[in-house]
Image 1: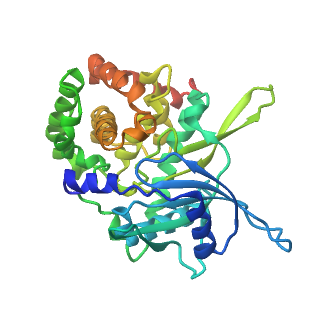
Image 2 (image 1 turned 180 degrees about the horizontal axis):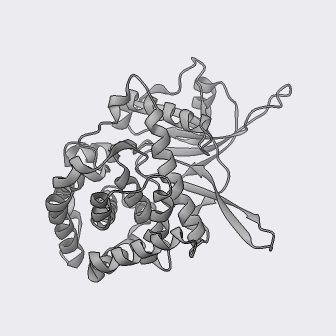
Image 3 (image 1 turned 180 degrees about the vertical axis):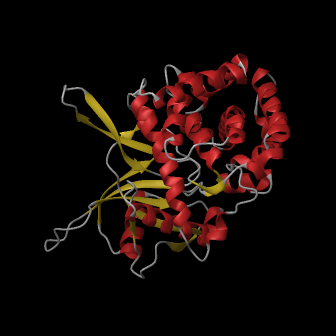
Length: 376
């Protein structure tokens, strides 16, 4: 995504398969007969919840799947999607609540299909994943304990991926990928999508500070593979009753590995804090609980901690600017695209108004309280 035109071509190339086409596709590529289809919300790909008919002699295996149809732009990079699929399988084998990847009739983890649209032939990469139970965190009550567990999970995920090997792993060095936190300066070419108001001023200020205070310290951060999108719609939870009869929520699924790339441990915790703030009634306090969980597995260095505030502001800017830009291209998908924006601008402004020192004090004091067991 080296230019605005690239992003536009990607956004405009969002697939538009009908239910009938999807049924035929699942049968021809994966050898499964569809009984029911339901579209799922998505940013610039097309996703479907697919139920499979059981044959009379079959009693085992899942009956519910998610079919993912990548847009034409990302479909040009099948190696990257192959690596993502193998990471999902690797994490699943390591005990993480990720989906299983369904193999094609040709025993691959994905397949390229070509559709004649009349004026041209378009190619789409398709894959089938098992459907995970639970509901998004965005629709669930979030306790400090759950925030701690999510922070811990983010760190465990990154730490586990240290052991992941694949011949095409270099695909995850995605230099101009707009969603890698390293690429915040790329937002400058999309600023025209914002209104000329305080929001734009804040974004410009964040980009300036990022160049001065983060870009100069990247070599001091510890590198790793990032999930890169642990947002409140990509983490599923299920509830159970505690001994006292209260509902206890636990993570039941981690979704959407499409934004994976090489980054840094501090990127993962910053991204997770950002998205956990979105629906929170007490957003500024979220960071301390997530940080405590993360640091129970991977303690941050002083330099990494010092960049955390600006990295959270930067992720808000990425999400808010790209949502505004994508809305201009896809007004029909505005409701989904603007999920973060509903509260995101307010949270970003609040952080900016309070300032780094005041926000850090809340985060670091909350994280420290876990050491003595106060917040537990």
